[in-house]
Picture (cartoon, rainbow over the protein chains, first blue to last red):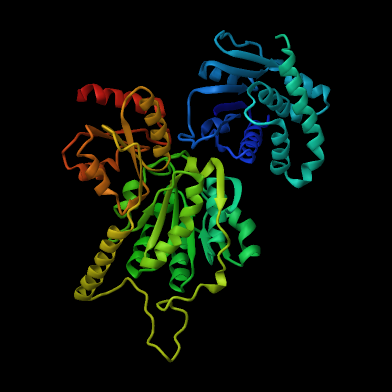
Length: 183
Length: 356
């Protein structure tokens, strides 16, 4: 197993934390993990991304250009990374804020109305966890139980009261991925 | 097995320095290594009593290192390229005075103030002597977050064994990325004896210890240099470290260190999947340099390709090792741009085409 995924969006949407939670979960499951944040002038421009690799064997390059999965939380990220999904790979995106949807037909395209759903859950900050739940459902890179254990490690103690809400969001994302919401 | 954590390279290095029983750290903030100072300020003093000090400049940091190292302390500084340039005078003095210490360069793009992105443009400065005079630093090049942590205690021990400054040469990407790291146990600071040569106050029982790099008589200065060169020869004989991957049948050899070695390894995997017998030599010590393994590889390989995040610096050492027997090419990106595995593959394909 070697999963290569990029999480991309605006700064503040929580893409770096999504990657961290996945990496931590991979580590708990005794896999090799590598988390590489976007690192450059684009950080100052408001967009952020991180490449995460979870693998059974040693991970060579932390920097890669083709992905098994692209997770895009805004239009610029979708535009930039749609072409970088390997044929047969998966593209997950927040469909609430997308005007130009993806066009590729050789990949599994998974629209998740995550922003809309986060409003329904009355906390827009857990949008990223809805999408992460959808990612776990689609890719099965790690177990959902491990993601919850990872959350406890990644979130500082003072935020632990938010764990039940995060759990709800993760589960909602899994349901949305299962039900195949229309675009 | 030690404690497992998911950490950034810079944080792993800082944590490892605490656990290595470091006595003092002097530094000045600069991207992309400021996490080292931040982490140490937060964690070190209350855990081990280590002195962590933000100096007024890099020049001050290196001279504080000179003083605290001279008092026998296990001491470290870290910076990034422009800051390391500012330290060069002090580094030459420390090497001349034979004081052990650890210097960390989280390399960013240059020349000048350059960029804040990862680079390997400081290879020449690190291994050929960035300061004045005939001196050498032992230079370690980590390629993983694990090695960012491990090379700290390894570096301190090498520095103390040879009374020589050790440099960890890494880059902004290894500093910022997170990987799984197994941390070593805490070294007890109180059990390390004060070295016999340290200037910590003279008892009546022995003559004064003098640490200096000033020997005004040329005859004396030459003898100091001869002693230094003898030490450097010992280090070259004993401390060369490298890693080889798939060299047993390689007809084309990638030579790369640090982050470039990770990217080259991916390129090698892609080539192997297409039947190209590519191997990898990863120098771990950049000085002393692993000339012999490269020289030996030249007997069977058709060609060599160095991959560096610079305009071609280490390629000169590979050419020295190969000594004209085989073609040696360089592929690099500069100014903070990182080469991709696919770019390296296309260079290798071209080399195969011209070799056959």
